[in-house]
Image 1 (cartoon, rainbow, N blue to C red):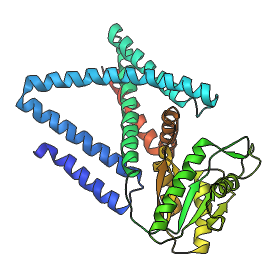
Image 2 (cartoon, rainbow, N blue to C red):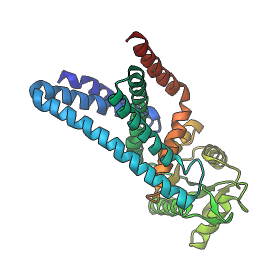
Image 3 (cartoon, rainbow, N blue to C red):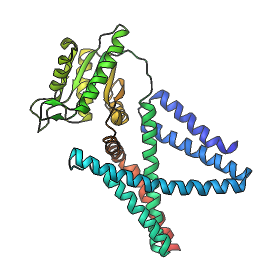
Length: 334
């Protein structure tokens, strides 16, 4: 049982972190590490107790992992083609396609190095796999904890329901993506109203270069047209990105009520990063998500992860450089 001690300690730290502040990415990493150490400990115990079974299971897991990478690369490439055909060619829409191509290239490099048995190529492939493994670990941490965070039930009063804006169709009309946020916001508002509160619904979104009106105005019009009381709607119409959405909304809420609490509504793929940003700008509240079309979800999630990865670029660059220097050392010494 001693083998499980690191996993247990990491999970304990994770639980404390969630209780203190659930909107930290460190919680995701701690959960991922605790699960990794627990899995490794279980496999080690199995090998000690049943050596042959343990080794066979290890080989089977490695084979499944390899097949999983191949299958994932194919799914990502397929999804990327769908995204481009439905949403147009932009860097954000190409992310799943690029990720799939990168995985396929990694598999090809690994197979080539194994067949040719070239020393330089083998070290390069090993280094690439190590870097990819590190990124994949962080991505899985992001997915798993983001899923859990989106299902946390934080029972607090709320004076505001903040809806983050998204692009308008034709410069004036609410898109299906934004409509899903507004419908979720109405549902949250109804739930709060049942408890005897009448929170203000704060539509947050400025006017983009290709938009004829601010997103917040189109959002308010959408809500009023569906029977939502205009008196309970406020607008934040200066923001151009998520951080500004939250920062400017915070200013409006603090000016009206210094002790406010709020619920922020966005799409499910965006929940965890929005929560991280809300912590950074000092928002007092939590974030909930609305459904997203299945074909849109992979590229959107990858985009969110890339944004988080870049936000911690110093740490991630240092780790990747360590892998590179380790590979260089192995190549030089062997």
